[in-house]
Length: 339
Image (tube, rainbow, N blue to C red; front, side, top):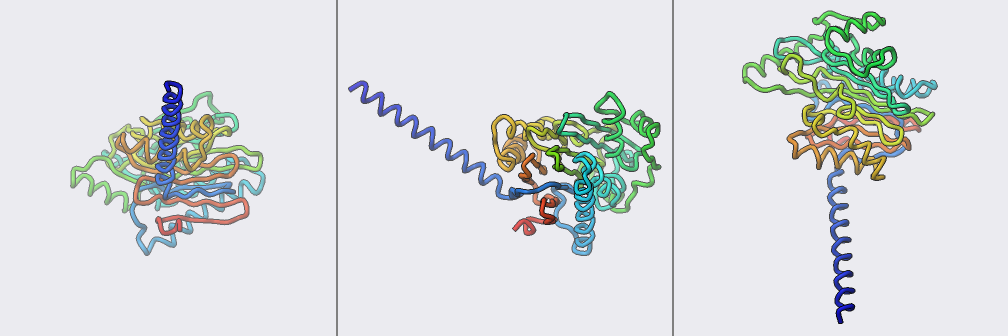
């Protein structure tokens, strides 16, 4: 009788375990309801999360600028360039556009100045470069790459970073280059309302080249009305940017402090590398399950070495786009574009 009872108990425990696993899988599926997974992707970009809808009069400009960035990245890959070269080239296009919070369109800090952050990472060898608080680099992503290629360090900050860039031929500009009326009005509104730091429009890119190497890059002006010297997740390797051929390439956008505390980008890669999760499942788990309890929202673009791509987000929108190996282009400015 005792053996029979033990056997029944064992069967019951196994049945309950299967029910729990099934329930957890259901949660993962639901949590990936937006940012649908896509295969055969070689290059992708994002233009920030949480920004609401694009004004109708600017929609065409947003789409064309993002498509230009995608074309620039694809052109590098098609010509035999590396994934690192591709993400830098595409991010430069977005930095040069006043539509996004990076480079030309960067937001103001509380002292009405611009401090820009960027990072880049090579998934083949885990080399990385980052800049925090640049005040004069025309293209912070190029400065980040120069730090990766020409210095023994991963990150340089402030005036010292800009000085390093000047010594290595990175183009510098005066602060007024970054000015846009839109960002100035945002700062005035934030000060009038005595609001804390806010913002959106961070840009990023991920790439897979013909040699199977991944790369990721991220660039931002940070948050409107942010404290002088504040650094978010964009230049932090493992938080806002990460690339590993054995995992994924990730570029993030959202509330930087939370992405730092949650080591968002590297967690996604680790779930793929060690837990063998799909890109879609891993990215959604971090963005929609891990980060919200920490008080943060945002999104990521993530790409693995087989071309599997996902772009989950926990905000109303994530501006992103991708191009497939076959040359299919897709730009997403709203959830309706994902259908």
